[in-house]
Amino acid sequence: MALTRILISVKTYPTLSATYDELVCTAGFKEDGSWIRIYPVPYRKLKYADQYKKWQWIEIDIVRNTKDFRKESYRPADLDKDIIIGETIPTTNNWILRKEIALKNVYTDMSTLIQEAKDINIGRSLAVLRPKKVIDFIW
Image 1 (tube, one colour):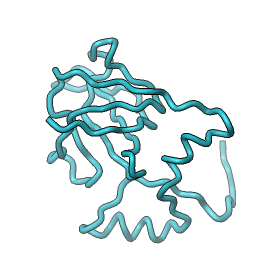
Image 2: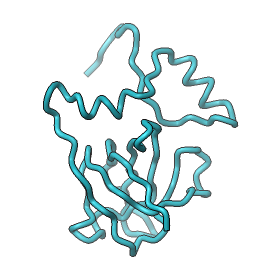
Image 3: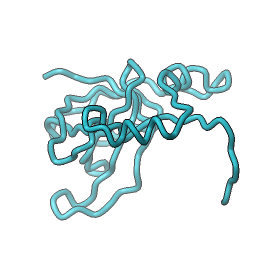
Image 4: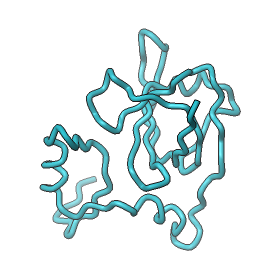
């Protein structure tokens, strides 16, 4: 069993599942700043001690999710195994500790991201994008 350390940054709203009742898609950063997606996670059925928060480090045994073509997609190796819950990264000093991980690999060109998403050797589906200019914002 090899544990992977992940800083959780995204948790989707639970969706219904015929197999697991309900699931959450979780994404975050590995220590090198690369993105990773963990799906399926029956979040509300996890032991309370295993229910992680956003911006919290976890350690979990994962394997490639072969049912998902996206290269960043993994799934828990065994849903009955405990998740090791680590420290929560605070927002102090203008989010500096979160930025150290989340901003390691930043894109500024959407066309590069689109090319990488279409390239079967790269297949990027998660990224941090910092636009050069915000043209419009609709709320």
